[in-house]
Image (cartoon, rainbow, N blue to C red; front, side, top):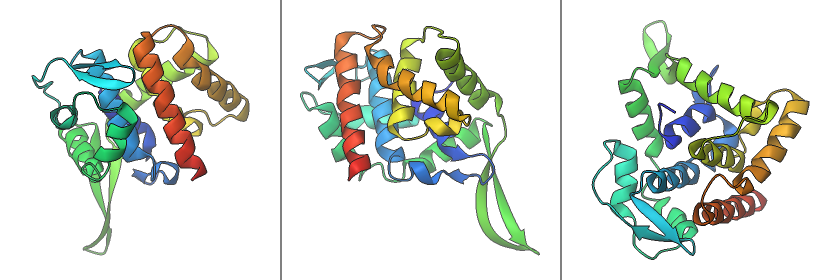
Length: 213
C-alpha cells in the first residue's frame, strides 16, 4: 500500500458522491483511525505487544504526522483497547488532519458548493482515485479470488469490517456475504504473529460492543 492504514481506511469511509464521511462511520472512524495507527506502528516495529499491552521499541518519527502524533502519546504497558478509548478525545478532530494530509498529497481536493458567489458548504472530491481503487481491488481479490493478503491488508480488512464499512466496498449482496465471512476469519489466517492477532481480536470485541451500545 502506498498509503498508511489510517489513510486507506479514511478513503473507504468517505462517500465519493457526497464528499463527506459516510453515516455508518461517524461513530467508528476516530477509534478506527487510532486502531489502524497503533497496528501500523507495530508493523513498522515502533511498538510491539505483550498480552495485548503496548511495548515501546523506537520513538523516532515515521514522517507521517498522524502516525507520529499517536506514537508520541502511547504509554508503555497499557492495554491497546484502553489506549484507543483514552485517545479518542485527543484525536476527535483527526479527520481534519487526514483531510489536510490527503489534500497536500493530491489525493483529495476541497471544493466549495456555492449559491451564486456565496459559499454554502465544503466537500472533498477524490482527485486521484487510483489510491482508493488499489485498495478496493486488493480487498476484492482477497475475498473473491482467495488471494493471500499481506499483513497490512489483514489489518485493514479487519478494521474496515469493525467500522461497518464492508458494504461500501462490496455493494453486491452475495459478495458482501462472502466479504463478511472472510473479514471475520482473516485475523486467524496465520499471517500475523499471535500478539497482533490477539490485539485485533480484542479490537473486534471492542467495536462489536460499540455497535450494540
